[in-house]
Image 1 (cartoon, chains in turn red, brown, purple, orange):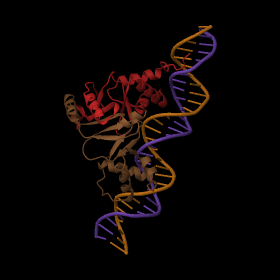
Image 2: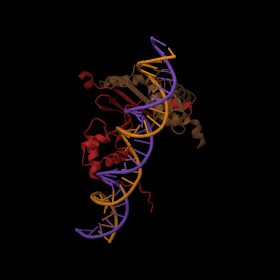
Image 3: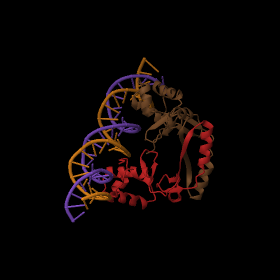
Image 4: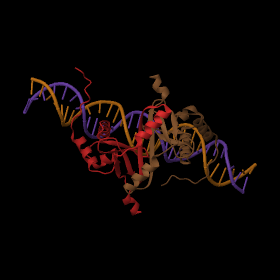
Length: 131
Length: 131
DNA sequence: GATCTTATTGATAATGATTCTCGCTTTTAC
DNA sequence: GTAAAAGCGAGAATCATTATCAATAAGATC
């Protein structure tokens, strides 16, 4: 029997709690933040589940400039993020016009299998008014 | 606290060696790689100088998916990178048409001071042929 | 429901990249 | 030349993340 089972995934309270916490939030959260919030869930478990959820495409990983990785429960499909650099609010951008740009440039330089990665960083309305 | 340091920058052999090594390379290099290459320069010094050079805009920092930061001596001005995910070759892209896209979206969502960050990741011609 | 297999958990150690510390060495100004 | 301060280097310290491993619990089977 093919032991190469596509890695079965069991349902656990911990993972449910993590996904739930992410769903309730408009911001992206780090493993530490989630662990602080759900102190019944071990830190290693938070990291493990975030990694798997991201791998399964159920959540998105967002790299912050300082190096830490935050995660967010996004809707499916290709999209980019508009992130408030002050409060961390994330807006999903589903109208992506970068594929053309990427493909054209890839062809010009002989690259294949090109994918693009892009993010917009700014200050949201609320934060701009507050200062 | 902001990391900006308006102090004077002195000329040193070590920094010159670092810049020189970067100039001679088409790829982006990590602090470790530079330290291995220039074993007369201490690791901390490599990090210090890379940080400052990037801050001063003399080199570009490129974040790899695995979390490490690589640096490259780029030409001046706003540009993006087309990176070979196999050999690390970097092509500078100076024709950026993303400003419009960013501004439009920022306006729509009430964001101000928006800047974009984008990279193309693919396989270069040489690497594609080799496999 | 009892039992077995094994994914999952969690406390902690380990890792890897980067930054800090601090005494010593150069640059640069005078 | 001299002296103040930027810069250096070796190693300690930090920070986010990953690995270890015994104990636990999910899902299948009887």
